[in-house]
Image (cartoon, rainbow, N blue to C red; front, side):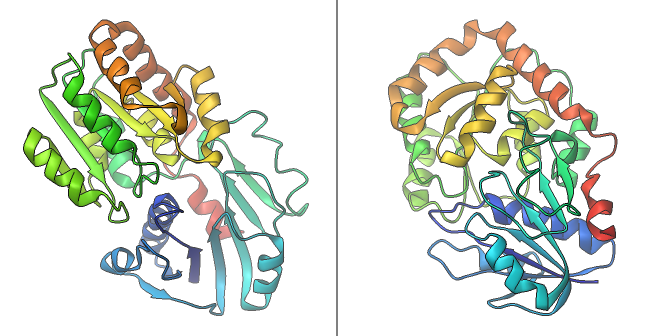
Length: 325
């Protein structure tokens, strides 16, 4: 089957849409389907990265059997125009804030009323795959979860990843906090994406402070497995951390992250630091200083994350649903 994936990355959009679409593409390709990406050359685009993964990237529509759309700026009007180019449309969404003309909708997030919030936004015939049962997980995470030992609550290794583009520059706030905290870490991993405009400055600081610097990696599951605690942004990476039981504190850096982060906080699956404008370097200092005395809470966060994401009775159950619509 010929499949076209419409998505984008940029300094403003971030990298999350493209990364989860690559996971979808890899799984579809394993089944023998032919996948092409449709992306725009925005500032901070990831077209070169996608091409290095072996995919052709186009800048226009193509006639295909299945169109997959993961893009907040596209809605029912655009999807209706695409009907003449495709037999079926799949939408990946997180927001439930606009109508869609699609045959299948996937939203992996845990938010209030997640089972019904798309009822009036999609056609009656649309199949809805909603909630953590339908997490989009790369093989590396599935393999890591199966062998991940229980967390002890002790924090010796810290992982910092504030999203691929980190538009609010949270990574620099954390790096400043690490210079001030009284907590000593045996190892610190700092991850950025190619679309992070401060990545060279961050790399230099990591070199000076003897932190491990990583840019646009494909081994995040390993780093999450090795870490005892993580500081990150809200978004899809939250559920990856939960999936491997990595306790974390999250900063909300975009409006679309608000609902899922509030729910994750209610479920005790994260420490929610709140909206980025209210989060300062001192906020991170206070967090880091508190970690040695938070062992029980940290263990509980890990357990809650594993429990929330345990509803998958098989890895990536969305895959067969997607190809059979």
